[in-house]
Length: 390
Image (tube, helix red, strand yellow):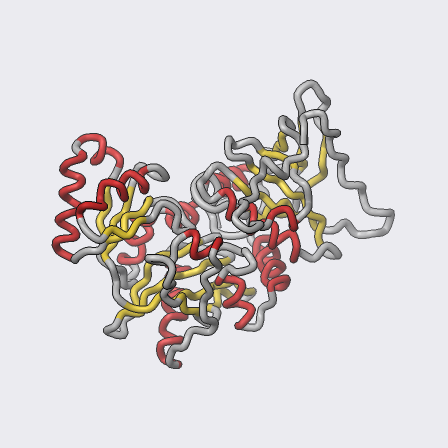
């Protein structure tokens, strides 16, 4: 919509004697390359949230970082064929901005447009941050909400940062005795100082562990920027693609086995693991990449066809990963079940996708927690926690 769109009205107060519904701000979009998936995920949450129980305030963050009031229209937030939605297409105004409070005693959200008197939109009780990737899932937004004293769904500052950085995630896992696969890291200064030495480091890694290798942005998700490199001839292009999303890259060895995922959800008595799922090989893709996940709808098997012992083992490891990284709310833990029978943890995702085909909601659906109940449990878990040190 244009900048001439009327500014939104504040939410009307409840009638006398009527209790005020809890106010949930659903924040989505963002500056990362996962902007689209965040919009799709938020649409699914807006569709499922209990409007009898909660007032909802949708806030989108545009690709350039503007906080925009957006239409509460979940159907416009879905992928249509190969057309990808964006906050820019949902914003009520081209210039208006939503402003969050930055002091502990104020939860009043304000909407401002150039040349107009700012309007109060009412207090927010809890934020549901549906951002994926840097500038949202990595602890930056969580830090802002901690300063504001507003409860929020999901992991805190440290867990969010660790969960976003594949290098430090693996280091934490190793320190807690969780099994990880071989990997190498190329930091920005290494590449800037001596690209040839950095390339040699990767080639030596492949010489030790074999081709192919996977070259990944260290701090990105949704399989964006990842390349499977079969030999040295494809290395340069893979490095460039990964560095397009993050100046720090991670190189991982190919682990031969089955891809298994498991969800963790915070209940009143602590974290519990869902039934696991299996991601079968995708015949039309080299690996489970962005298009396989979100465009071509590669399907997972829920529950995974595992033995009872294997199921209990992967559920135990998923909860251990949740605890090791000091996570809160939810986590999807991704594993490889090697041909040897050993589970190796690949990574965790502190804000996994909630799209209609996403594995995290499907695993909990199979575990007896419906999608609306899942959304409600996450909000209630956030409200039980205080902000600040805990």
